[in-house]
Length: 364
Length: 256
Image (cartoon, rainbow over all chains, first blue to last red; front, side, top):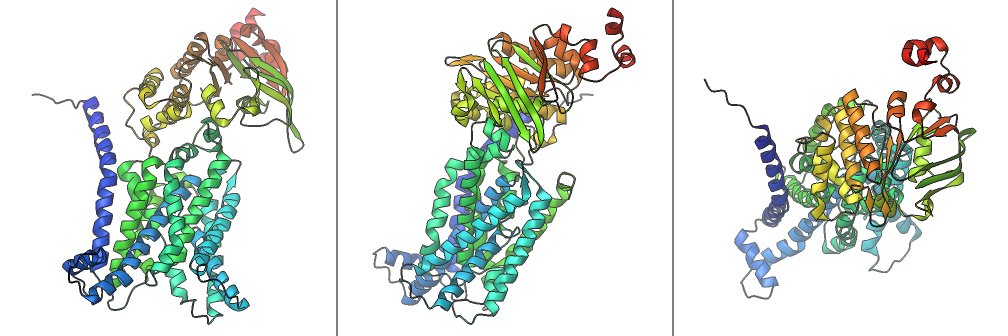
């Protein structure tokens, strides 16, 4: 009888190779997934635009005479594409913000919506709308689309800073305190947002459901342009924070020993995460769980290295949100489901499963 | 040379460090001992630049430590903390390679991380997830990480320093000895090492220079560690009586 003894070294080498291969392939695969999501989002909806029709409309816009119908062009360029681009930015923003917050709080359960950061952004945005309407200010037209994202940015900045100072003592972050304080912040900010929305009859303030559960329905090119700078700023900063965020995962003292200034690093991460969250909330209201699900899936497949995790999160977050938006349009067509319902149905079980696996570590 | 001059540090009303002066030269293994709460870890944190004392100065190679940036410090010294928590799925290799970046090494120097894993006896663990390791194995991975950061004990701009805060606390006796042998090797090749230890026998065996702290003060310092770790010290610093000493160290009691 021959007993095969498994060669341990051969086994580990192939594990390393498989992981390395996945990492090399990750960005191209995610880009392809996002491209598929964009095409699907452009062609699926209440009004049918065929793939061919969409192709022709794009060609026409680029200056070729393709004989695209006016209907296809209007549906594509005035409705579907702004909505899709908004979805890309909101999804990428939420997923990047989630990955960054998880690094900042040193645990994988931080999500901008779950711990009140999105709610803070919504409260700030709603307050500014009401204040300006109440004061009867006539603002220059170019300023208006930027006002919401800017105020949402400051709202999330305030909540992130407050939460960090509550949950962190001497460089150590308490997971339990972060989650519980975050839930309280979220409840308070949502309650105040609800109060303002119900006491205002301003037409700008769409219904509470938008702020509460999110929707890409209101996307226009103007609104897209308003939030784009915040998302772009965060994307462009990613290459500069990956290494520092990795070091910070070991602790603030360790990050300092490894040559980073923890204070500067944390300030940057808070600002970038708040910018991304603020932009997402200003564009589509409060959408939960994207920030937790996307980095979690990617860590299982690619590992936790933030140099890859952050850009990969942006891509998968964008694709995931667009697919969720397509579902929100299809499931109860011609009506629309709030997109937050879909992300919660997908995300809550993921959250519970992380919690169960880490029960012994978290110890609430 | 790392020198501390007249360090004083208070936390609220408590004085944690009280006029502490000490020197840890390159080429030597300096050990800090003392009972719980003596200020060993705090003194170490001042020496690494992590804590700024209320009074006094720390000099690294003749320069005040607060004039060096975090990046410059990281190139010249590495620090092994008592314990580290990492709640994300990093592999062992990824954790150790954090030290490459911290030491500002080129990508071509990646082999150093593997050599460091070899040195701490963790060869073959590269692709294991850090979280699946035992406490002692995790501690050795971090030792490999800090060794990677300051791999050459002497570089062109001077010696490197290694600070180890109770590096033996979660290790079995064999690995305790291995860690101190590695630290000694680093010192013999020209680097400076400062270690906080609780185990007095290990301290006496390995220290080139022993510094005893008690209630925030240096109460003894010298290069003959065996002479310092003696019944007098055990009585006056650790509060042991003769019966305790005789039971724990029969040979030492007889020698008297």
